[in-house]
Length: 156
Image 1 (spheres, helix red, strand yellow):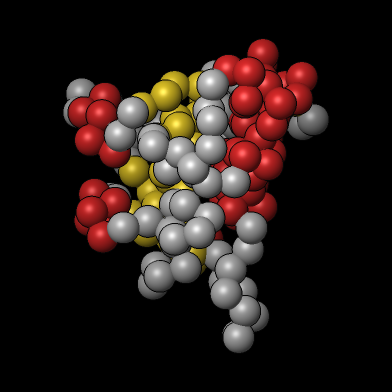
Image 2 (cartoon, rainbow, N blue to C red):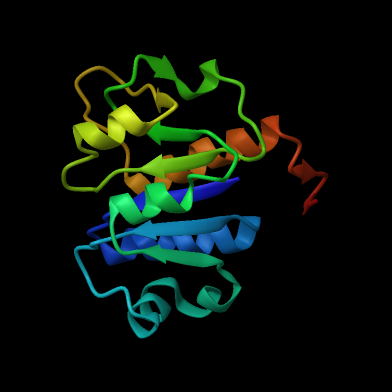
Protein backbone atom coordinates (compact mmCIF):
# COMPACT_ATOMS: atom_id res chain seq x y z
CA UNK A 1 0.00 0.00 0.00
CA UNK A 2 1.26 3.46 -0.91
CA UNK A 3 0.01 7.04 -0.91
CA UNK A 4 0.72 9.32 -3.86
CA UNK A 5 0.34 13.10 -3.74
CA UNK A 6 -0.27 14.78 -7.09
CA UNK A 7 1.36 18.23 -7.10
CA UNK A 8 0.59 19.05 -3.47
CA UNK A 9 0.30 22.76 -2.76
CA UNK A 10 -0.12 23.07 1.02
CA UNK A 11 2.96 22.08 3.03
CA UNK A 12 1.05 21.48 6.27
CA UNK A 13 -1.19 18.90 4.58
CA UNK A 14 1.82 17.17 3.07
CA UNK A 15 3.47 17.13 6.49
CA UNK A 16 0.36 15.60 8.07
CA UNK A 17 0.19 12.95 5.34
CA UNK A 18 3.89 12.13 5.77
CA UNK A 19 3.41 11.80 9.51
CA UNK A 20 0.40 9.50 9.02
CA UNK A 21 2.32 7.41 6.50
CA UNK A 22 5.35 7.13 8.78
CA UNK A 23 3.19 6.01 11.71
CA UNK A 24 1.35 3.44 9.59
CA UNK A 25 4.39 2.18 7.69
CA UNK A 26 3.19 3.33 4.27
CA UNK A 27 5.46 4.78 1.57
CA UNK A 28 4.61 8.09 -0.12
CA UNK A 29 5.16 9.27 -3.69
CA UNK A 30 5.31 13.04 -4.15
CA UNK A 31 4.54 13.96 -7.74
CA UNK A 32 5.84 17.35 -8.82
CA UNK A 33 5.84 20.08 -9.41
CA UNK A 34 4.66 20.94 -5.91
CA UNK A 35 3.31 24.33 -4.96
CA UNK A 36 6.02 24.74 -2.30
CA UNK A 37 9.62 23.80 -1.60
CA UNK A 38 9.85 20.01 -1.17
CA UNK A 39 13.52 19.87 -0.28
CA UNK A 40 14.45 17.65 2.64
CA UNK A 41 14.77 20.72 4.87
CA UNK A 42 11.29 21.99 3.95
CA UNK A 43 9.70 18.56 4.37
CA UNK A 44 11.44 18.18 7.73
CA UNK A 45 9.78 21.42 8.85
CA UNK A 46 6.35 20.24 7.61
CA UNK A 47 6.53 16.67 8.95
CA UNK A 48 8.56 17.46 12.08
CA UNK A 49 10.50 14.61 13.63
CA UNK A 50 8.54 11.99 11.66
CA UNK A 51 10.34 12.73 8.40
CA UNK A 52 13.16 10.33 9.24
CA UNK A 53 10.60 7.51 9.48
CA UNK A 54 8.79 8.38 6.25
CA UNK A 55 9.64 6.54 3.03
CA UNK A 56 9.36 9.16 0.30
CA UNK A 57 9.91 8.90 -3.44
CA UNK A 58 10.01 12.15 -5.43
CA UNK A 59 8.85 12.26 -9.05
CA UNK A 60 9.55 15.40 -11.08
CA UNK A 61 6.32 15.06 -13.05
CA UNK A 62 3.18 13.02 -13.60
CA UNK A 63 4.86 11.35 -16.58
CA UNK A 64 7.86 10.35 -14.45
CA UNK A 65 5.51 8.85 -11.86
CA UNK A 66 3.61 6.87 -14.51
CA UNK A 67 6.88 5.61 -16.01
CA UNK A 68 8.08 4.48 -12.57
CA UNK A 69 4.92 2.37 -12.26
CA UNK A 70 5.17 0.74 -15.69
CA UNK A 71 6.57 -2.54 -14.37
CA UNK A 72 5.04 -2.42 -10.92
CA UNK A 73 1.97 -4.14 -9.62
CA UNK A 74 -0.94 -2.45 -7.99
CA UNK A 75 -3.90 -0.39 -8.97
CA UNK A 76 -3.92 3.38 -8.99
CA UNK A 77 -6.93 4.48 -6.93
CA UNK A 78 -7.81 8.16 -7.16
CA UNK A 79 -9.63 9.78 -4.25
CA UNK A 80 -11.92 12.38 -5.81
CA UNK A 81 -15.19 14.12 -5.08
CA UNK A 82 -16.17 13.31 -8.69
CA UNK A 83 -16.16 9.52 -8.27
CA UNK A 84 -19.39 7.57 -8.52
CA UNK A 85 -18.17 4.88 -6.08
CA UNK A 86 -17.79 5.41 -2.33
CA UNK A 87 -14.49 4.19 -0.88
CA UNK A 88 -16.41 1.52 1.05
CA UNK A 89 -17.64 0.09 -2.25
CA UNK A 90 -14.39 -1.49 -3.43
CA UNK A 91 -12.15 -4.26 -2.19
CA UNK A 92 -8.69 -2.84 -1.56
CA UNK A 93 -5.53 -4.82 -2.28
CA UNK A 94 -2.19 -4.67 -0.43
CA UNK A 95 -0.38 -3.26 -3.48
CA UNK A 96 -2.86 -0.44 -4.22
CA UNK A 97 -1.62 3.15 -4.59
CA UNK A 98 -4.01 5.72 -3.15
CA UNK A 99 -3.66 8.92 -5.18
CA UNK A 100 -4.67 12.35 -3.89
CA UNK A 101 -5.09 15.44 -6.08
CA UNK A 102 -4.04 19.00 -5.41
CA UNK A 103 -5.78 20.72 -2.54
CA UNK A 104 -6.58 23.73 -4.71
CA UNK A 105 -7.66 22.04 -7.94
CA UNK A 106 -8.01 18.29 -7.51
CA UNK A 107 -6.66 16.14 -10.33
CA UNK A 108 -6.73 16.92 -14.05
CA UNK A 109 -8.46 14.75 -16.63
CA UNK A 110 -5.24 12.88 -17.53
CA UNK A 111 -4.91 11.72 -13.91
CA UNK A 112 -8.58 10.64 -13.80
CA UNK A 113 -8.07 8.68 -17.02
CA UNK A 114 -4.97 6.92 -15.69
CA UNK A 115 -6.69 5.76 -12.51
CA UNK A 116 -7.79 2.13 -12.32
CA UNK A 117 -10.45 3.06 -9.77
CA UNK A 118 -11.93 6.34 -8.56
CA UNK A 119 -13.50 6.58 -5.12
CA UNK A 120 -15.08 9.29 -3.01
CA UNK A 121 -15.83 9.85 0.63
CA UNK A 122 -19.54 10.62 0.98
CA UNK A 123 -20.15 13.95 2.72
CA UNK A 124 -23.30 15.83 3.68
CA UNK A 125 -25.19 17.50 0.85
CA UNK A 126 -24.08 21.07 0.22
CA UNK A 127 -20.53 20.53 1.50
CA UNK A 128 -17.59 20.32 -0.90
CA UNK A 129 -15.02 17.98 0.56
CA UNK A 130 -12.79 17.02 3.44
CA UNK A 131 -9.24 18.22 3.96
CA UNK A 132 -6.91 16.12 1.79
CA UNK A 133 -4.91 14.85 4.78
CA UNK A 134 -8.10 13.78 6.55
CA UNK A 135 -9.35 12.08 3.37
CA UNK A 136 -6.03 10.25 3.00
CA UNK A 137 -6.23 8.96 6.57
CA UNK A 138 -9.84 7.80 6.26
CA UNK A 139 -9.35 5.84 3.06
CA UNK A 140 -5.91 4.54 4.02
CA UNK A 141 -7.26 3.18 7.31
CA UNK A 142 -10.08 1.36 5.53
CA UNK A 143 -7.70 -0.02 2.89
CA UNK A 144 -5.30 -1.25 5.57
CA UNK A 145 -8.15 -2.76 7.58
CA UNK A 146 -9.46 -4.63 4.55
CA UNK A 147 -6.03 -5.95 3.61
CA UNK A 148 -5.16 -7.15 7.10
CA UNK A 149 -2.41 -4.62 7.75
CA UNK A 150 -3.60 -4.11 11.34
CA UNK A 151 -3.28 -6.81 13.93
CA UNK A 152 -4.41 -5.83 17.40
CA UNK A 153 -2.67 -2.58 18.32
CA UNK A 154 0.38 -3.17 16.11
CA UNK A 155 1.06 -3.04 12.42
CA UNK A 156 2.16 -6.26 10.78
